[in-house]
Image (cartoon, rainbow, N blue to C red; front, side, top):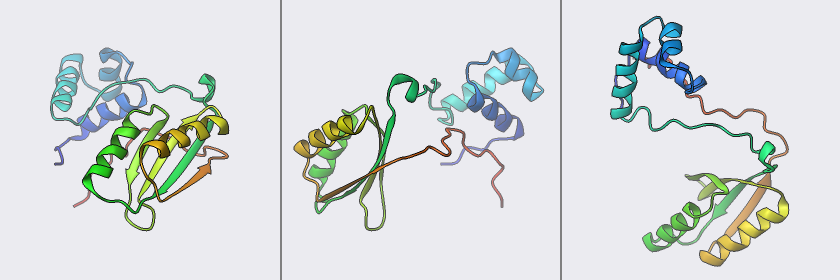
Length: 158
């Protein structure tokens, strides 16, 4: 369900996406409003589920997590029980930053962040010991060209 947002809501969201640690006064000044209306709008957007949570973004390399793998998974199993076990296995692994079920030849893609290839192999061995997987292809990212959590906030057309 799409929530109706006006231009001020979009400006507030843009400021929060850029740095949610800014003070309400700073955000209000940047969007051309005052503190109380900005606070009320943020509260309403949280209640509506537009704002899920506020967090910080860490530098993985500064924390020694230098290897990013994209893991392509094909499975011959599509039963609900297999999917439940697979989901549980992924949720238990903090190395899995993202997991997507796909249309097409590949069933799932994972974004996995680890220290190195040896750590990836440990992750891989643990995963295949828990769930049966037909085929796994791991692609090492050589360079991160773009990574953002900022969603495009332009007004929808139409």
